[in-house]
Length: 93
Image 1 (cartoon, rainbow, N blue to C red):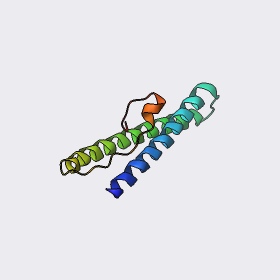
Image 2: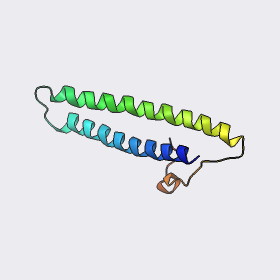
Image 3: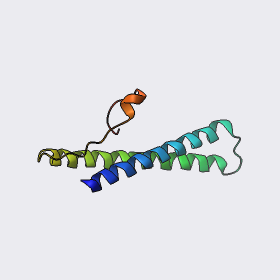
Image 4: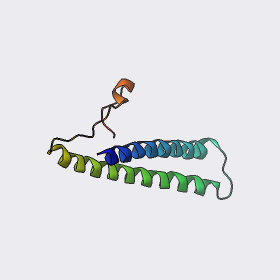
């Protein structure tokens, strides 16, 4: 189960990176005058980040499905989640 925990941490880090990319793309598109291909590049950055975020969610769902199978055997990979202390819902999503 240590491997699953490592993957969950990597997905969390990747999600944070993608959030930064999405924010940056949005700021570029709305507050920076983009000439030439700049607007297209910002659109591509935003679109690619959104697709990647979707893949992260797909992988998370698959990990949760696999964890549910493991849970039936009495094992667990649940870790402390800081989100509730941040006023967010519990869980990775």
